Image 1 (tube, rainbow, N blue to C red):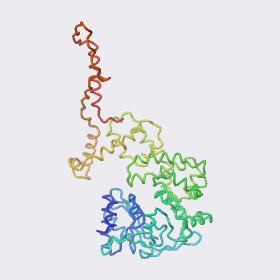
Image 2 (image 1 turned 30 degrees about the horizontal axis):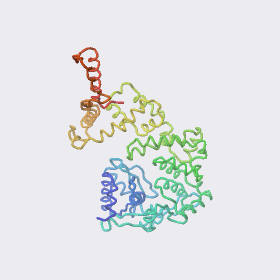
Image 3 (image 1 turned 180 degrees about the horizontal axis):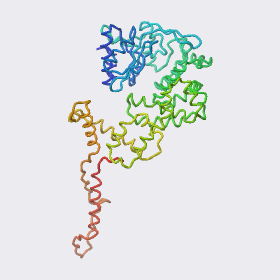
Image 4 (image 1 turned 135 degrees about the vertical axis):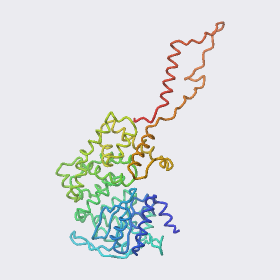
Length: 468
């Protein structure tokens, strides 16, 4: 096995490994050369967790993407111009399958010209050298690393270097990606690249970024772990106006964004939870803007009516969930678990950020810090005891009942620990005075009060995993 294949598999989760194998089989059957590229390779080589799988084939990728979708994936979107498609697989694994291509920038904001290319030509046309690395997944060359621009050395130096001297002029949106990658990766910007970016920014090229690309960058920023740091850096580089001229110092809601970041860390680190950040992020980002300024931002980012409604109606959507979570009828951990698990993730995240109701906050935090981990600790052997065929209504009902019993069961009784004599909690009896007889033990009211206290403590130690 190639060292790079071993490295790849050690960085992938079980679901991602299955997806790589599935796409490999489909590409081999279609007779297409397949490569893993872009952010997946960068993150692997830099030692980061791989978020998304980026595949490139030498040929039209759309038939391959459709074949993979037919084998058990959801086809989220297709780009007929670039011959690429985004897919989501069971378990939340996300991937993109694209055609190896050359892009020639259009003049005055016109669409670029796209032509089919080899993998080497594709890599040389990318934004930064750290993203211009590919790993062959073909039978005859599996594990071969392709690095025409020496991006591996830049990763080892933790440095962002432009793949071309004219990269920012050909595609000004790379100015936004440079900022985002600086924050996500913690890399420095190579000196010549910084000079090129400054020149492009001072030439006003950022104003020519197409609205749909602005929208894509807004979405990418929302999914990052530290969007507040990206916003700060965009402001320092005078690039915030690309999204909205109104996002100045007085209306940039950095405090709210940092509060949202803290809430997002409670959610699981999976694709569904990360995707749920988008609507709450845009809501918080625009919280200080007027209605007209919000509308202008939506237009600048080319947001569809559906996307705009997701964040504009987010507060109203969460009212039902908030009412249910504050109800006095919610008494058991299983009730909280089933309620939150069935809710839309973006509504859950928004309530963590926005709700001022103590019961709502406590129950949401208990769900993520106590109940969800308890369910995740259930072993395969224990799940096998659930009756019914997996996927059937009977099985789902039995599974929910099994989870409820697990969460609501009482903890095992714990005997009170004996307290050594002679301590403050259990002082030794004073010796009788000289010449006096020891009084016989009395079973009066004082004895009853003391034994009652011990009994109450023992009962308290037998408590169950309470809802609070």
